[in-house]
Image 1 (cartoon, one colour):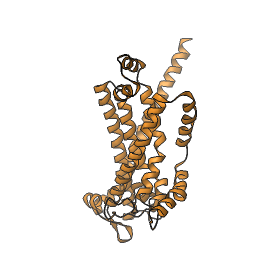
Image 2: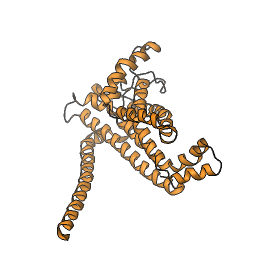
Image 3: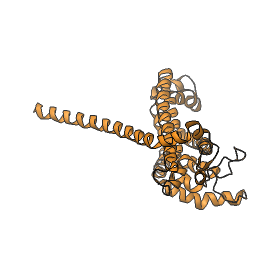
Image 4: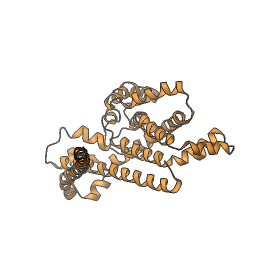
Length: 297
């Protein structure tokens, strides 16, 4: 009886090990492919010229990433502000304050929103959000950095809310009971005990959401305008723009294979992958440091 069980356990261990190694190999192959296809662009145009270039104009063989960087950064900051301003209080309400009836309604609704495809958000953004901004602010077109920020901010609320709620629920009940026993009210307990104890999970959720916002493609492509230029002034959120992902999705289908434009788009993809990978590493590091310092959960 022991031999079959031993072999079955060995088989499961081997299967899990192979799965882990396969995921690592796939990631390494993606990096290798992007680096291999990006090298001609970096060699021909120069790393500094690409990263600090003020214009992205493929028809003139001008490839500068600065318009993409500024638009992506502006959209990410505004979207994250909207994301946190709505998603984090909602997570606190669901984890600590909501009654059974409220949870029965809100929880499925949030899960349903998380399952909506990004292209559907994009269509709704074009039909409703873009038209509203165009009429309300007397814009030539509602497709703008602001439209992309609002759409992505709303789109990723369910992800932030779910992760933050799980982190808040993971805080042991003894912590809250001890605070209440010492005379703190419910809000003081949430603010001074529950949130600090769950700060590692909350921080990781925010950083991972930044990566998701930066990496979103179809929704932002439909509403941002996909015009690769630096806004004038640079903080003009009513101007059109283009992000890393929207440029790749909008131009890759028509580019000639092996051209400078082709390799420049792969360089854009490599920079995007590096940014998202670094954010994931920072999220893990921040979560470990905060957990070690505050005993987070």
